[in-house]
Structure formats: structure tokens, C-alpha cells
Length: 374
Length: 60
Image 1 (cartoon, rainbow over the protein chains, first blue to last red):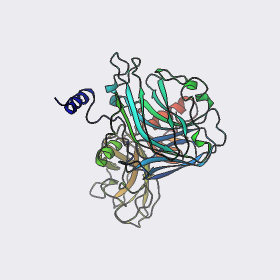
Image 2 (cartoon, rainbow over the protein chains, first blue to last red):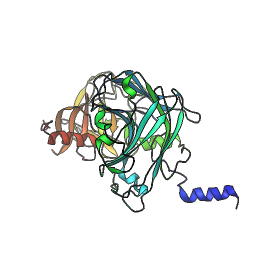
Image 3 (cartoon, helix red, strand yellow):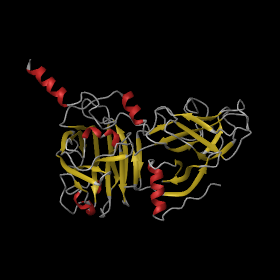
Image 4 (tube, chains in turn green, yellow):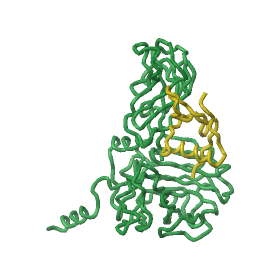
């Protein structure tokens, strides 16, 4: 057997050849919510899909979170976090993280909490205007355990490839269900509550002061931070597992969907035309159904979601009341509106109810966003 | 690790009168939240209710 064949056989015996990457949308191809989001207050912000910026307790920070076309060779996109107003004083409880969360049922291959537990390796491309030490953390929310590793951005405004291996943990199994089990967190800033101890580089019960020791403060000035090619896999680092756009968007829709076309950000009063309503809009049929039948407006989801989703509603007529209302979808320019008073969604179907029976002769509908994020 | 601001929470009922959702304004946007502990918004609503920070009004 040739050396190449021996190597191929070895790799094949050690590592899954496909679906190695636990990260969804690691190449930042999918951005269903839009390509740019302004951050003006503490909270959670998603973009590109599956990547969440979590901001706690800041009082000055403003930033932009976007899908960028600045990327290393072999990639088309990256996630860009750009500070537009700095946090001049970082208080003890202030933090900024960039994270992806995982369902426990998708992590069973790690065998965490057993004698067969596996090490995992993160790899990614990163670039920032702000050099220094950064922290990447795995946080097990089922067992309140965590481990942190540091990496260094050496050169400003230059793409750098990083690999970080986390040890196996024989304590604390991940639940085998669709709930949150693991945070994968790139830290961008952390106040002294999180940095005043000794960095915990082996799995242990979480101690806040030991989680982010040595972290550079990215938000101290108007810096930027780009990342792409994010991979988390069992064992050691392998080349990034590129997936087709269709594969990634299908995975993303388990956590977020909308009735609007891919490139259209949700908005009210879409009016006549391609975005006004289509087969994804929740519809209450007209008089082909009896007016005395209390059925409400409904539609199927294009991909089953993780759990019954939270929805935000949008008027799909040029007239009528915006937001949580059913509006005429047969004739643009008719202002009839019925307030939505309840919903009964499940993982495969959305269902919107008005407060009673309607006697209007036309079909009613509503556009929507559905969120089943962890 | 949640920073949701939740106000104006009210139960919604299906045609049979069962509580099936909570209408609430979350971070400034009106949303309908399913009654499902695995839904992150419902979990946060109930955390705030248990902490005495939020009250859910009955359906109209």
C-alpha cells in the first residue's frame, strides 16, 4: 500500500469524512435576517444565521453586525462585528460574546461524561484591527461546566488561521434532546467579574472569575472583528468542511424562517407583487369555507423547526393595520384588519387566530418571522 | 445569559378556550410565544414570572 493510501485509510478510520463540522453556517454563507444589523443596546443579535452576539450590561456600546464579503481565499463571506461607539469604561459585569449554541442530541458523538469522552478541536479564520489575546470557551449548560483556551491575533487587519483543541471531559453527559447543551463562545470583551481569577484550561465546574482571564477588550475603541471558516469537530483539526448553500440554509431553517423571499428582510405593507404574499404566507381562506368556521390563518413551515417557534407578524397589504393583524390578501388597497389574539404553532405549522369569527368575503393573511433559536 | 426586555405579556386562547400562546412585547417587538418550555422566549418569560419581575395577564 502506498503512503498516500495508508494515510487515507488512517484518516478514514479516525474521522468522519462528512458532517464532521458541528458548526452550522461556519462559512457565513446564510444571512436570512439581512446582511447588516445595528446594535444600539444590550441584547442578543443574530446574523449571519446561527451566530449570535450576546451583549450584557453595556451602556455606551454601539456596533454593526454584518455578513461581510471580506474573506480569506476559498471563502466568500465572513461575519463582521464593527464597534461604532466604544465602551470607554468596561464595568465588571459587562460582556460581549459571539457564540453558537448546540442541541444536546447533536453532540452525542463527543461522548462527554463517559470514559470514552473525546477531545474536540475548533478551527477558524480570524482578522481584527485589534491585536492581542482572545478567549474561546466551551460552556456546558447541562452540567454548569466549562473550559477556556486563549489564542493570539498577531497582526492587525490580517487573516490568521487558528486551531484550538479542548480536552475530553469524562464528567457530565450532554442531555440527548433538542434543548440547549453547549455554548461555543468567542469572547470579545469581559469585565473583571469574568477575568479576575486564573484561566481555567481544563474542564471544571464553572467559576465566573476563571472564564475569560487575559481577554483583550475589543470594544475599548472603534475596532472590528471578522471570522469565518469556523469548525468544531471531534479529534484534531481537519480542513474546513465546505457545504452547499442549500445544505446550510436547510440546517439554519430549523432555527429561523420567514415568509419573505431569502433576500427580502421582513417588512410591513409589502403590497401587491412578489413579496406581498405567496405560499408561505399564513392564509385564512375566503368564503369557500363557512364564515361560521373558526379556523384562522395557517401555513406549513418549509423545514420542521426545533420547537414551536415564536413569531413576529407583518401586514401583507398596502393598507390595514400593521403588525399582529390579519389583512386582506385578495385585493391590495382594502383596509380590513382583524387583530390576532392568539396562536397555536407547532414545529411544522403556524396557526394564527383572530378574536372571533369573521364575515369578510376575502382571504385574510399575515406574513411572519419564526424563531426557534436555542 | 438572557438580556430580553419583556412587557405587556398576555395569554392567548384557541377557539376551545385553551391557553396556547403568550402575546408579549420582547425587546420592543410584539411577538406570540408558544407555551413550550423548550422555546427560549417562553423559558425567559417564566423565569421572569418566577422572579416576580413579570405578570402574565389573562386572555380577554
